[in-house]
Image (cartoon, rainbow, N blue to C red; front, side):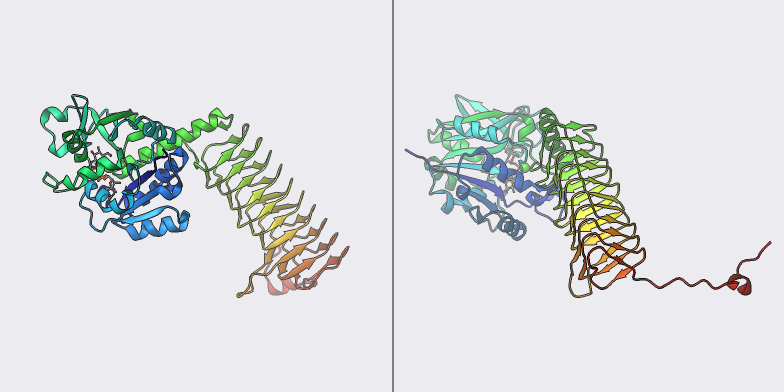
Length: 462
Ligand code: UD1
Ligand code: CA
């Protein structure tokens, strides 16, 4: 028989200890939110289909719901807990959703470090029980719920309810539970809020199950994976742990990272062996970097495609753009919005490229802005040349053909077209189409006025 598994991610709590206007699960960890980590872990574990995953929101729930619906396909269910009366109440609020499943995993939303393979193993091992809880042995058990093991039964005593001797227990509740839905239905309404916090605790479900003769168990995992995020300090620690795992993975794959303490790589980035990453580099989003590329210090990449042997000399900011094999950029370059540098193209010092294509072997070496421009191959753009692509209303395009030589400080008033094998004189303001094989001169002629400085006594001759 095929049993159906639902996964309920609890994310309705305020996260008071974060001292932030944002709900806890919306806090950033690397370039994601805490909730993304949890959703990705569930997805990668492949324990169930996306449509069987629900996120329970409440406090700041509009923000979370809006984020989820714009970043995930609508198959992820969003459920609401109108008042936050505790984790037991949270699970109860979602009953009309989970009662259609055979198995239910309930997962605290503040656990960004669980590995997919661990979640998978936990679920596999939970099969014989009516409730299995993930536990870990904490160096400092702090305010975690304590795990009490008696006569083959497992129960959880919340810190505030624990006796002095129970407080000595180091095995604690990680905040992830696998239930048989039939068993959970029997106890969910028996949970009360007669306790120190006046809250409904989902953790009481275990003792109630034990009383009814259901089977409870525990699955011990590492502290590193199960440490919850409750305040900014724990968030920064979690971010470090996640980062160390990602860097370790790429080091194992043959990526060279000179200084692991100053490099950040997004969980969704992909790198090949023999990529060299210098200190102080950030690689975010779905960036992809091919073998032999050098990512120089101070570079920040977001959704960047970097081909083989590309050299980002230093301080290159590249967003949603591509540099093909052996292209070169930097130092101090900003390349954005669907720009493409073809093979061996170069963008140098203080250059901004937006929504432009720089043809093979073409160079934009200094102090230029190319926006909405298409450059052919073997073009040279003189220092200080720009496209005037915006007329105050529209963005207009500039086309520059193959083998063109653009003199320094040329202004292309777009829409502009320069045909193959042409040149512009330095300082030209281009307002008309330039035909093939021509020189465009569009500047005032120079006139020299003899004796002028002496008459004005500007320059005194000694
Ligand atoms: C909880 C457990 C504790 C365990 C710890 C592990 C309870 C009563 N205690 O404590 O045994 O050691 O997690 O990290 O469950 N939430 C809701 N609605 C609510 C209250 C909470 O959705 O009304 C969500 C929160 O958003 C959070 C999760 O449930 O994602 C856990 O809540 P939190 O307040 O962090 O519980 P802890 O005090 O950490
Ligand atoms: Ca918590």
